[in-house]
Image 1 (cartoon, rainbow, N blue to C red):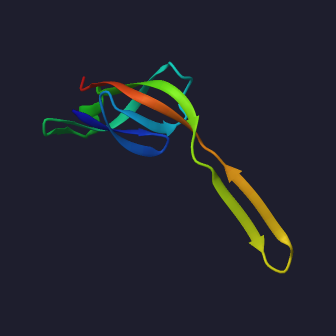
Image 2: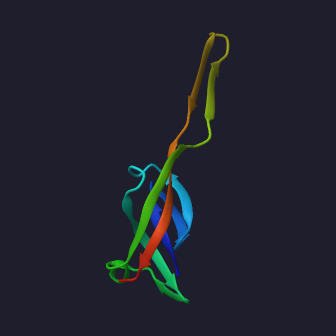
Image 3: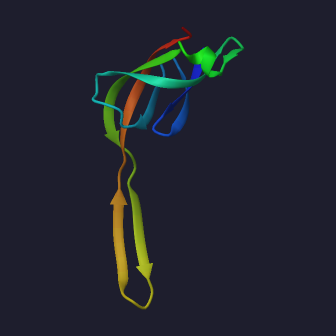
Length: 102
């Protein structure tokens, strides 16, 4: 059985016991409930809101870590305009503990 869940504006295909990196959710050690968009169980697909109203995907936040550094540089010629900036997104590693059809 696997599910497609939505978190942080992105969609992930997950199975029970799998660990994935997502945008920061909550403190490490807490349980979170993810919104399922689709469930597949032995070829049986549940995708409509009526079928998914009792379905749930539960995950545990294992740790927080920082993603890769993104460097940016703005430059305008003939005016001595230069600006450097950087960003590192804070990510959460989560483990999918339970997928239920309801």
